[in-house]
Amino acid sequence: MSRVGTSRCSRPGGARGLLVLTLLAAAGLAGACGRSGPPAPSSEQVYRFRLHEDPPTLDPALANDEFSESVVLNVNRGLVVLDPKTLEIQPAVAESWTVSPDGLVYTFRLRDGVLFHNGRPVTARDVEYSFERLLRKATGSPRRFLLAPIAGAKEFTAGTSASIAGLAAPDDRTIVLRLAKPFAPFLSELTMANASILPREIYDDPRKAYLRAPVGCGPFRFSRWEQANFIELLAFDRYYGGRPALDRVIIRMIENKTSALQEYIAGGLDSLDEPPDDNDTAMMAKVGPEVHRFPFMGTGYIGFNLALPPFKGNVALRKAFNYAVDKQYLWGVLFPGSSTPANGIIPPGIPGHDPDLPGYPHDEAKARNLLAQAGYPAGNGLPPISCWVNTGEDNRRIAEQVQSDLKKIGVDITIREVDWGAYIAAVSGSPEKPGQAPMFRSGWSLDYPDADAILRPLLHSSNWGPSGNFGRYKNAEVDRLIDQALVVTDPKERADLYRRAERIAVMDDPPWIFLNYYQARTLYKPYVKGVVLSPLGKFRLPLDRLRIERGST
Figure 1: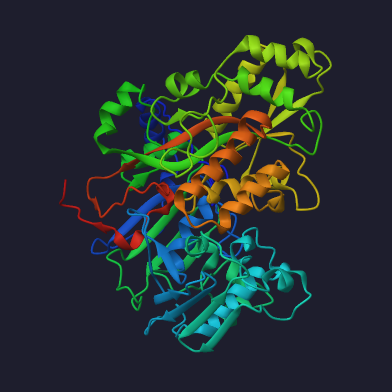
Figure 2: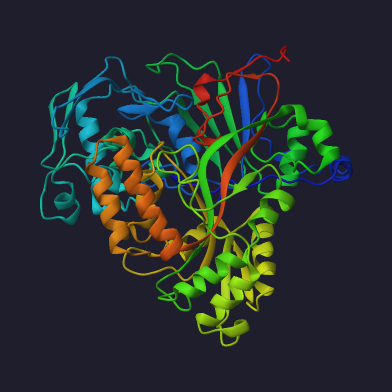
């Protein structure tokens, strides 16, 4: 996740009135209208969408959030790809593959005619290089765990082996991956953006020019990036899957959602990730027919830093905070239609989701009682606590409501709103050292439809820090159940193991305030055709499927 609007956190919608648009337009200052990106000839098919801010990176090995992946997944390709609609694993650079009966050896046959954007053919040596780069410690990938099942991967990362024992390229069109032990979600993990195939001659550049000018083998090639303004992608004429219908993609950086909505209405955007709230009747009357709603495999939460006081070792305090928050109000009144209250971690629709998990319904009396058990009756003696959020009106509003709910039981928290880079540094820390944020608003969208895609990165103790376990949660039984599920092939047995792990983490040893299961809502102009409403999330839209038909309704 790849992480959501906050890291992989999609944000619920909201809007202000049309009067603001009228006044700003009259002054020539309509939101970001003066920063709409390069002009497009009328004959071109150009698709324009919005990100809240610049992606932290366009390097596939480093991508760990939805903003980065919205670009990376369209510039790059891996061996296999997850169909965004059916969620089936499909061929990509590999035209076919086989798996040995013991589940240990994966042999991929690369298709002919796959080219990098610099015109060079893709070979198995490029796959070998890309996987070595992802696993190399110096790369600093937060997602190298996805290749950890390959035999010898851990030794290579640790520097005790110069090569990866289970990685081989016997010829230019064959790549062989041998696992140390069976690993049920391995193929699914290879669909992630981080497993993209990269050209050595570009990504071995000591100047790291690829950070500003990436090269892949996907349907769109990178053109330019004007920081805090726009990223431009161009159709790759020689893409192995056929040239996309879109000629250009303009990704505009517009932080303020009111400005973004104004720009959408004015015609400067063809889609928008933040529709108005359902209770904004005036605005919904204007754009309501263009709102698309669809399930989204993701969970929102407020994390606790379990390496720092007051949450370290204090289960009663973490439970008190959970009971204090009124999730029904958050998602039924404050942000109607954007999410459903969460009773746990694994979202609905994923094998292992437990609809009978009690969770933490709003109960102020229980919250006060647990607060006293935690050693802080009515909040007395509780040290100052700050809740970090990344910049965004809705993130702030959610945090303010949580702040209000906690105030009712005697707990005072402050809200610290910072830009994405500062937020990630404060929240994730490093594998060795915790971040400075004691609480943080975050969320996670699943990269593939498996409970492993959320439980392992966010809860397993091996993933402390940037890999996903920001709060440094550690529970030996949860680790054991997650590890056991990885080698089990029976779907029902795997789902049961994940339910058991989740129940421990939620009901016995909560690492978070469990907030919401996401529901995606996105605006699309009627002339945008080929839209795939995927449970993978609004930013996982495959741009090569889109076309612009201006005469359509």
